[in-house]
Length: 326
Image 1: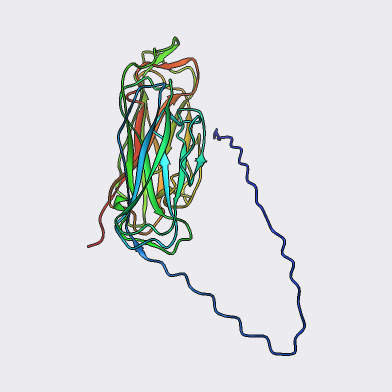
Image 2: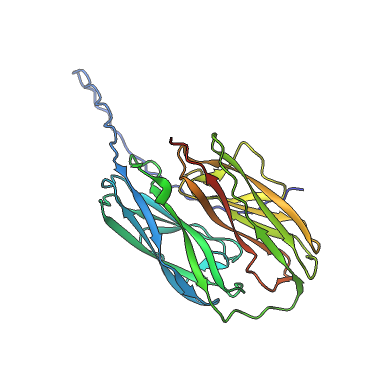
């Protein structure tokens, strides 16, 4: 049986009515001028973040900076920020100017996505910094590093060309420190999620395998959920079906905006292990070279199931892109 994710999308389109008056003339109509072609430039965008240290249940901001080492941009640049696991955008703080919520879901097991437009005119050696307001939820019962993702690219429709995508993305790390919230009462399970980084084929496709299981001490009473964010410059391969139980929670063909896959899978017995194979395809003919990844997570769906240690619940979905420039 295939499970689906219910989504409510609300879009409002505004239109304008223009009154046009025609006047009869005896002279021949002038020849329409040819449209002026938009001339873009070769830009070299990059992004960096600062490491933030937080305890669960607290709020803070993470600085994200876009730089340009190429020619001055003629169009906007799109910055995309994906929250780390068990972290939401802080609703009590404003988003930076130029930023909007691309995907929002207060369930801390699902990431939220913010997009920001860097205005045209970012010159060589110049930068623009955004402060992302973050709230680490009390669902985070772990310490250590957790990671979201950040990327930047010329906006859809921009005439600018990116010189090198390798530095257009980076992991957005948070360092979680104690005290962590107490473990609630319930059915104790031991879920884990392990990544694999398959090489991308010449046609730009790859099948990324996530291995998951349950070490106990108890079997899950309900389904388990895997949430995976596609790596920078990769989408779900539309020519291949998603596994049973999986659906897209965020769908976007633009290379700079990741897609979010949510899979609700059958319960796990103690010491049971399975694989989840997700089909991926490069969104551009020249994806970044090397290891490219974004966050992934496993969590119980039932409120009766409790994970005592979430350190092995957080993981990544990634691919290895061979260099074929030679």
